[in-house]
Length: 228
Image 1 (tube, helix red, strand yellow):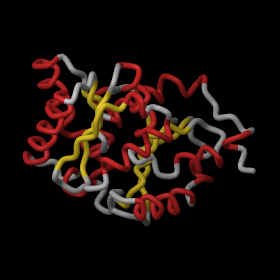
Image 2 (tube, rainbow, N blue to C red; image 1 turned 120 degrees about the vertical axis):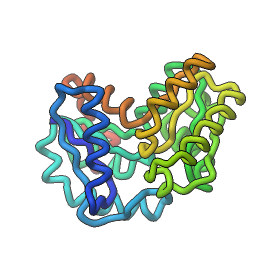
Image 3 (tube, rainbow, N blue to C red; image 1 turned 135 degrees about the horizontal axis):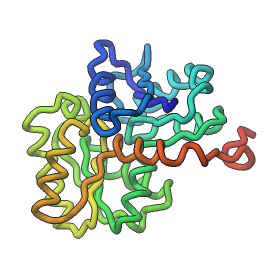
């Protein structure tokens, strides 16, 4: 079974419920598990929170060994390489996977929250080997925590950022936070109807790739993920 790993502490289970309903709406016959952290940050918007999340994720390694595949449901991909180093099953990061899919569709832009978004996204794009395809990074004037609240202001800010990204020449726009899932369908439809530009929501994109490829993929255990 695929494990969708939300690397945050979700005390009330709201985010877990939203993820389950969102993916089930697109793949109603799929069985998957959504796993959140018992301890860790409530969101990941900086490197410190990413490191704290990874520390808690590593405590789940034994449980994750029973998965068919692991999907890290965060665009920052916390613990992506560490899990690949410690697990025998394929591990897909929402940021890495979506950027690579976007690069197959043309030159892309990333839209997301946080003052650190631009530099952080450029670092990711370099690390993942797709920097030459990155046209621009457009930030919305809201923190990650606000994105998770899913209100009209989030939608308006995100749509405006997408329009700016299209003006930058992007062939495809990537939503740089999996918290955008609640507004993605409406946003994608409106942008496509007007501009014929695809919007990639990272959770759905990465889950779609994961369910398609995990039966035939494994990470090598020599070299990068050998652990030595």
